[in-house]
Image 1 (cartoon, rainbow, N blue to C red):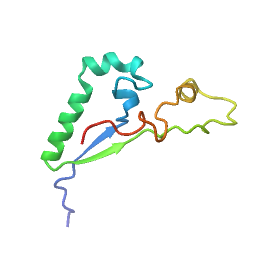
Image 2: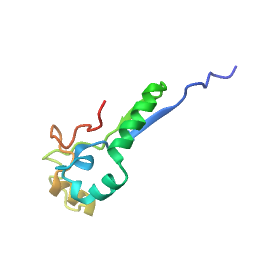
Image 3: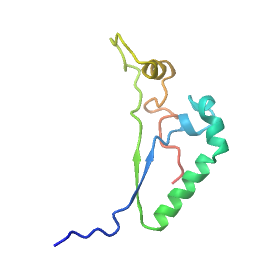
Image 4: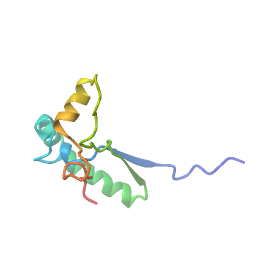
Length: 103
């Protein structure tokens, strides 16, 4: 007997942080043109609304929250790790780290 496969759909939202998606975010200056030009926040909000209306499960795949103690005693950081260390993007318990997409 084959297992039931109906309604095996889901929507995965990756890294929906204020640091990316909102003016005042630590990475906003780097991404604002793309976010604004492509209406990213409005499109994500619409996507969530349609998914929920149609009973599609929504999953969030957040980037790891940065901690002040990250990279202590690291001798060799990649450029992205160095940038993360300096900017403290997605900092735990900060305004920039939490999910910024409206429910």
